[in-house]
Amino acid sequence: MSELTHIDARGQARMVDVTDKAETFREATAEARIVMQPETLAMITEGRHKKGDVLATARIAGIMAAKKTWELIPMCHPLLLTSVKVELTPEPGEPAAVHVSATCKLKGQTGVEMEALTAATTAALTLYDMCKAVDRAMTITDVRLLEKKGGQSGHWIRADKR
Image: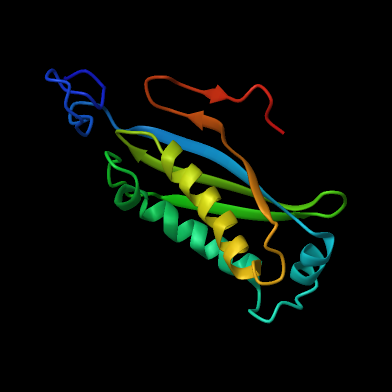
């Protein structure tokens, strides 16, 4: 098996060759947070947005993005995900926010960290897009991998996981 790197012997970028790697269960969870005005969050949670259920739309966008990560991120492998779960949790208070959590699973030869990160980020971006007319100061923060399971590197969990 070739070395697991995106750089070949000549220093050129390439897709990692996972041909000889065994298929194992793999799972990754990532998060993002979108901070907004309390009035914006109230509009979302009370269903008063003129564009409809923005949380449902953001959830679908996150799922769709996870499935297309390989088209967005250079050198990512096309993966047949077996599960994508995107949860959006309103966080009232100061500051008001929506917490996004995305978990991707599969049985395959490579991990799903990029798919989970893409799902969480895209869900947050969709919320921003749908609400920017009423709150342009929204901020997407805390995009990060929380946990990964499977593969050669085993189980990893962020020390400061919420």
